[in-house]
Structures are given as structure tokens and as C-alpha cells.
Image: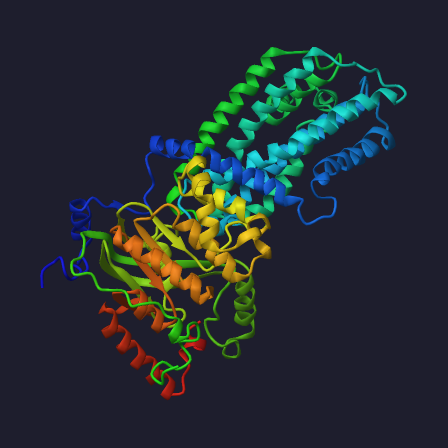
Length: 307
Length: 292
């Protein structure tokens, strides 16, 4: 029999297989592509990431009678709880003009970051049916998770604006009114988005390799909430300790920076003036985390989906 | 049901089977080269008992019991050293009892499940049709078509131009607007098949996905498979139904406990496998229950 009418015998060694593959132009499966190629493949499938994101965000609220209304109700109720607890029940003014606005901006943006990290950690396990069915750069999964969270953040921003406007009616609040600086919330969220994406890449790989970390993540994020000035002003509480080094580290860590620049744009607080150096810090953190996170995630590309 | 293949051919009535696949006179060049492939699953959080608990001292028993619930990792060797070469224009049936590693082999060859060791070389992009047909269950069929197509690397325009064809082929009609968790398993499998073959893949792998289809769909899918084979693609086909493997395939690989037991023309291998299964049954040992 000739080689064309019967299949070739199985290769007897790795070398023979490689030689055979080279002769017929086959490419090896399950090897990591080069970084440049990986970036290109990911970029080509950006539409895929976007559709996956919007579909997931939509599916989130699908099994309820109020449906997509929940994407507004959820953040509104959330903010109401925080404002009730920290704005009214626990004594509060704390030298601030508008404590409601301060809390609402903090909790909303931190929730976005937290959802990005949690979703990033789950992104491989949650999409295992996709991973086991289709070829695509796995980086799409953490990316689409962060995109999905951005999709849910948009209605939250409306709620956030409503709370800030309504805080006018709270006695004792010095209301800043609507300012041109409000548009700065867009770049502020943009930077937070890029940073969160970088963190999502890192936790996605960590949890894919060591699922136990998932359990620890919740504690880290809760700690991060108190260490980033989500509800309390860092300067006011850490500043009281008279430890300049600690104050500096805590005010310039990424999450605190993003909350700060978001408040610079939306709030009218003498304690939080417009400070462009913090914006530069924010941009720096975003780029560093995005690059580090992407490369770290890419290095394990051939191993996702094994467990 | 024939007496040689007891209880195996529950999926298909013989009269439903399409025409036999014609063996090609000439094979194309190799499209898949697999060398000494091993796949080991690490199952985290599960441990087999090393020895019966009763035979150990109380202390060791306690430790062993504890270890069974914390820090446990079990390795399952699903594929243990598989090598073969597949050619363009071939359709290869993979047969074997449950738990013999058929699905794992397909996933690893498709590059969707990382291999523990060994090499796999492919021409072009493979497309795998798994048992879990829905890509995202909570989302409409329409969205699943888009997501699947985009993931396969099609552009949105290309998907839009093939959209009607995909829906027609799957025969799901208005259901395309409903979430996929409202679909019957047959509808889901049909839609998946239609999505996966929308971009003609070089290597198509079908993992029992067609078992849920009705006779009409089986004819259509058979035609599509022939088309792919005709366009010099390679088709892998996993099924419990020997009859459908005989009908769809030109070659068969018999996998047993992760090792290739036989590889050759479909009729020869299928006959040997049928004999083996019949023997298992006459010994009163149902491998399908124990092997899982």
C-alpha cells in the first residue's frame, strides 16, 4: 500500500512527530503564542469580549420580574444602606460639606473594583464550558468580566448623580452644585477601569492555579475597603496617628488614588481639592498594573482549563 | 438491535441511518499528528482511600479521614500514551467503553484541555462539538450564535450574513430569541453543530453531540460532515453507537483505559470491539457501569 491510500503509522518519537509536522506545515497545539501574537489575537477578538460582557451583564438580572430594573435598584438600595448607616446613624459630619456624596462615590467605585476582582478570579472557572469548547485567547475572559462590570456601572453612575443632587435637601449639607469638574469622572473611571483590568488578570491566573485563594480574596477586599478611604477619609483617621510615612503609603496606593480623583471631580470639599499629581499617579498605577497583569496572565496561557 | 451489540446501540434506529460514508480512494496529507499524549486530571478536593479504614490504627484513621477532606488531590490518568496520524479527508470514529478517555482525547487533541505530556500538531483550527451544547445557557440562541462565531474568529458581518443559514440548519425557528436554557437538548445540540460548522473547520471533532438529534437532522449533519471531509477536512467522531460510527466513519480508533487498543478500517475495528463488548456481557460484567 502506498502512503496515500492508508494512513501513516503513528510517530515513534517526539522528533519524528515534529519532523512530520514540519513537513506538512502543521502547528503545535497547546503552546503559548508569542506576546506580540497574543496581543494581536486578543485585539482581533475585542468584539467577542464586548458581546460576552453585555450578554453576561444582561443575564445577571434575567431571572427576576423586575429584570433590568435591578441594575438601577441594586446600587440605589446599596447606597441607601451606606448613607443610612454611616451618614445618619453613626455621627458623621466629620468636617465634610457633603458626607452623603463622599460615601456614595466611595462605595460605588469600590464596589466596581471589588466586582472586577471577584469576577476576574472566577473568570476561568465560570467560563469553563467556553474554554473547553472554543479556541480564543483566554485573556478575553478577565477582559469581558471587567467590561461587564463597567456595563453595570453606567446605571450606577446615574444613581450616584441622583444621590449627590438629592443630598442638597439634607440639612447641614453644604451643596456644591453642578460643576464643570463632573466631566472628569469619565477619565477617573477610565483609569480605575484599566487598573481593575490589570488586577483582574493577576487574580484570574492566581485563582485558576490555586482555587483556595478565592476564599482569601473576600477578606483582602474587605480590608482594602477600610484601607482605601471608602467610607472614612484616610487623611482624617490615619492623619491623626501622626505617622507621615503610613499616611503617604495609604493615600497613594492605587485604590485610594482612584477614589480621590473621582471625588475631586464630583465633590466640592475643601479637603479634596483638584490635585493633578494624583491624576498622574492614577495613570501610572493603571499602566503598571495593566502591563504586569497582562504579561503575568499570558505566561500561563497554555495551562488554563486543566483543572 | 443486533445480538452482537447488546444495549450499546440505544441512540439510533438502523433505518434512520444515513448512507454509509464512502472510503476515499486517496487520502490527503496528514492533518493531525499526535505523539505519546498523556492527559492527567488533577481532581482537587477529592481523595481515594488508600487502605480500608478498619485496618488502620485509630490515630492513622483520624489523620486519613482528615486528609480526605482537606488538602486532597487525586490524579486521574485519562489518556496514557496515545499516538496516531490522521489525514485530510478521513473521518475517524473513536470507540470505547465509558471512561476509556474518548472525550478527554478529543479535547486534548483540539488543544482545549492542556496535555500533561506529549505533542499534538494540527493543520488549521479545530472545532469541537461537546456534550454541553450551550455556550451560555442564560443567553438567547441569537447571542450564542454571535458569541460562538466571534470566538471562532468570524467577523460580525460574516456572522450576520450566515445567521439565517445557521438558524435554518439548526431548525430552531423562533426559539432563536429565547435563552438557551429553554431549549431541548436536541435543539441545543443542533444549534451548536450549526455554529461550529459555520466557519468550515479544518478539523471537526464531534463528541456524541449528534446523539440527541432526530433522523432529519442526522441526515443534514451527515451531509455537512461529508462536505467538510470533501473540502479536505478531518472529522473525529465519538459515539457509543457502533452503527453510527460505521455509517459516519472510514477509520476507527478503539480506546481502552486511555490506551489505543486497535486502530484501522472502521469495519474491522468495530467488529472486534463488538465482540469484546459481547464477551464482557456474557461474563455478566457490565463495563459501562464499573468503568465510570
